Structure formats: C-alpha cells, structure tokens
Length: 350
Ligand code: ATP
Image (cartoon, rainbow, N blue to C red):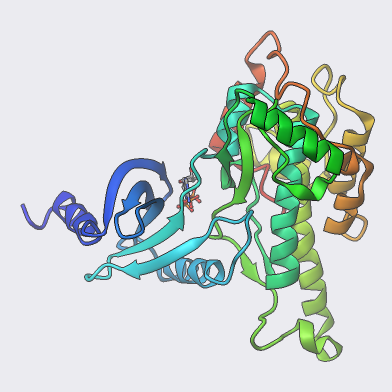
C-alpha cells in the first residue's frame, strides 16, 4: 500500500539512503526518531534525527526551525554539531544530520553506575559549564533544558594501557584542568568528552548580527536586561540539579505529584540526604548549595563555578569511577521513576 504510513516512512528514509546507510535506531523523541547511519560520501558515522512534522502544531514546527537556526550557529567541542539539515520532498519530514556521539546519554550511565565519584562528576560538570559559558557569552543563547538525558558522551576505553598511564602522568605534571584531553581512561567510567544536545527549548537572548540587546545595552529596557539575567541563571540552577544527581544518583527535587514537586522547587526545598551524601565532601556540597540558591541574584555565575575550590581541585580521576552500589537499587529506581515524570531537573521558569 503506497499510501500507508509505513510506505510513507519508507519513502522518507529511501530519499536519504543513496548517501546515508541507516544502521540502527538510537533514540526517540515525541515527534522524532534518531538513527545511527554511515555517510558514504565522507565515510563517517553520523546521527540522523528524522522529525515527522505531520502531527505537529505550527508552534511546534516553529520550535524546530528555531532549534535548527540556533544549532547551526554553534561550534564548540562540548556541543553536538549540526552538520546539515533538509526537508523531505513532500515536506513532511525534516532531517537533521548530526555529529554522532557514540556513548549515548549520561543519564544511562547514572542508572548503570548508581552514582559517580566526585572526580568523574567534576569531569562531567566542568564540560557542561564550558558549553553553557560558550552559549551564554559567545552566542547569546540559553539552553533551558539541561538534564542528564540531554548530555551525551564520547566513550573512552576503560582498561588502562601504558599509553594512557603515560599520558595521565604527563597531564599530572602539567597539572592543568583546562587540558580536557588528560581525562584518560583511568577510573573515568568510560566517559570522555561530554556534549550538550537538544536545543528544542533554547532561547536567543541577543543576536550577534543585529547586536541587540547586548550591544546597545544603554537603550535596552530594564525588563529585557533582567530577562536576560534571569534566563542565564536558570541554566545555572539546572547545572546544580545535574551535579547533585551525578554525585548521589537521584535528583534534588522529587515528588510523584507534579504539584508537590513544583512546590518543593519553588521553595528550593532539598537536602543532602543521609546516608547517600554522608561521604561526599563539604566542598562539593558547598558548590551544589551555591547553584541551588533560590535567589537568582545570589546564585553562582558560571565563572564563580569555575573558580570554586571543588572545581579547582587537582582532578586526576584515579579513584574508581563509581563506588559499590548501595545495598538496594533504590537510587536508580527512584531516578528512573523520576524520569517518567521528568520535571525536577527542568529549571523553574519565572
Ligand atoms: P525529546 O522529545 O525527549 O526532547 P527530541 O525529539 O528533542 O527528544 P533528542 O533529545 O534530540 O530528541 O534525541 C533523542 C535521543 O536520541 C537522545 O536523548 C539521545 O539518546 C539520542 N541522540 C540524539 N542525538 C544524538 C547524537 N547526535 N548522537 C547520539 N545519540 C543521539
């Protein structure tokens, strides 16, 4: 049947098949499917996100256009690259050709390991901060949807080799957090470069081309300046939620009832729950507290995060990537459940 949805879907794939060989489905969103595929021209594996626009509202379609417009401006090692995009000939589908990030979601690693060591958490969060700093300061965009599901990672081998040991020693000597590449495999839980994905909810604060409002700030209305200020700080709050979750394996705000959850978030009601937080350093707790600060004007800025003693610690990733899981699978169950209701890692919007 040439008119069936299956036939239509087949046609949609066949249109890109001459160049791209689809290998497997690796993800799914509300209106999209993500595939791993071989680009036979560049002889390189990529990810293809195929968005079905047929049941989307105009607003949702505009959202996709915005996502594409924003993503095509981005060029940073901690952000998933948009390589190209096109519409199907019948306009029903939109294809996003993306850099393939082989490891998948950090979220799944938390489920797998229960929680991360402080060194591994630092390794992840520093990269997230760098990507957000680039977005806020170079591009003028806020992400607004930072969560472990939207953080992908490049896997690195977990078995140490002499080369890795040597490189680790060199980076110890260099003693530079900025190096990035020194995070070789030892104890890093297989997590290399972390890349931010999913710009579906992101928002432009200012435009480099027209230079508004940042370039003409003297004439910009206070509500716009304030909006920009508050917008940026929602990403910092979300970084706090992610850091909390990495360290203990469950999110800071959680309730099965969305209304109760909203209440807890709006009051900033969270705690360092015993026994999970007992062994975590006071420096890590101090940083989390400064990110999950209710008053956005008192909340840390990105530069303050990067200057915090916990971040500046000499990170060698020599301790195990994860400790033995606690006696129950409580954490991952809680987290998995939390993911179903998927609210508390989203930043509260004023
Ligand atoms: P949602 O409806 O959940 O917001 P979405 O339609 O916006 O999803 P994405 O979040 O972009 O879709 O992608 C869905 C999933 O596909 C991701 O969570 C990830 O697991 C996988 N994925 C997306 N892009 C890539 C990529 N470039 N490399 C590897 N995996 C990817």
